[in-house]
Length: 289
Image (cartoon, rainbow, N blue to C red):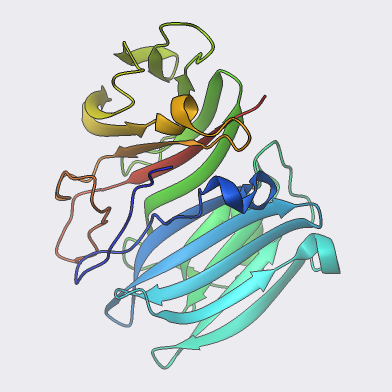
């Protein structure tokens, strides 16, 4: 399976890797990775939140990296294994305290490892809430005694997710800085003689690819609320993969206009001088038999 290989340079952060290989096993790929850009002590940093689910239970990992992808600190929370459903941990980076707070005791989950609600995960730097996830915001501020970030806070810039389905693959996506999420659906019936790839956003068909056997790799542009979103797809393994070990398709949706349009790498700009919102979503789509 051809993936979206990555490299990271002075103004980039890696968001794609080769973890989608069919040999890795589908059970190990039930994960969602979200990447946020923030400033810590005047330096650009990345906060990576990874939600995973396997036979042992749920887990969330929070890591902070610098702009060169060097790890500064990391905390792994396994509330369903060790009953640590709420708590906190203090870390150190750039000579300042980074505190991670969480309350997952009432978290509600669907098919995704990422909770639907009833939780919070907060990252506090120098007593300011840099990143707050979940719908229990009042409880989070009360528990942490943190002030809202004096700057813009962390910016959601990338998401990587594994999705499963027979003909339909659904998730939620954010294409602008206003925080609005959209229902994203990819449809493709590979069992018919002339399959078609369809992309719908909020129930509206925005893209169709005919003769998919011949156009198994390509790119196009859709418009979502006046925002241009580039769509790249690679469904080669759906048609030409080994029957005993079927691979996955890869889809990318990105609004980052400053990224060079090429299949050779994926970069998300991290320059603090850039005020434009850029978001990349990578989906690994696995067909259920």
